[in-house]
Image (tube, rainbow, N blue to C red; front, top):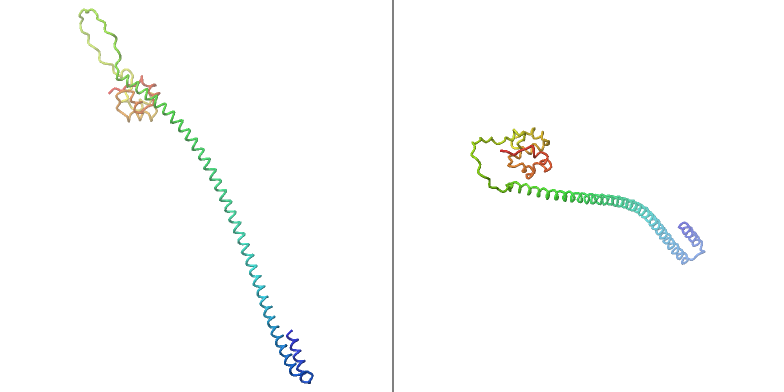
Length: 227
């Protein structure tokens, strides 16, 4: 377009020189040519500006596409993390539920054991009360019946009281652990008997928690608590 305007100007100049075109027409033509030239330059500038804007838009589109891909990847990562965390929470909830059920079962078992121990304790208290009464209350003597006076007799010397050791009884206050174990006690039970000395009566072995009642019942006829 610019070369066409230049050729037009040259043609007009030649026509003016030859006298075919007036000076006013020549000036008008020159003004038109200048205006056309300016328009052409403006068009070129607008074209370049549009090309730059298109390039900028393409660059922005590429950047937005990259950002969208990054955002999509981050969203996917967050979803995966949430799924994993949700699965972990579900697993922990199942573990807590199972632990709660186990604790409830243990609590029921402990309650049963506690009830059983309470019954045994009540039975032991009753037995202790029975033994205490037996210790405090002397055996009833038969009613005295008046007898006719007997003829005097020579005094007979009384024999010495029977020795528990001679009767084959094991004294829980002096016996060795081995002697106690020979009665059927375990090593631990024999050690507890030795450590808990002295005893006034055999029943203290149960009252003080040294031996269980069934064990005392099994050996009570073979022991003594002499001091």
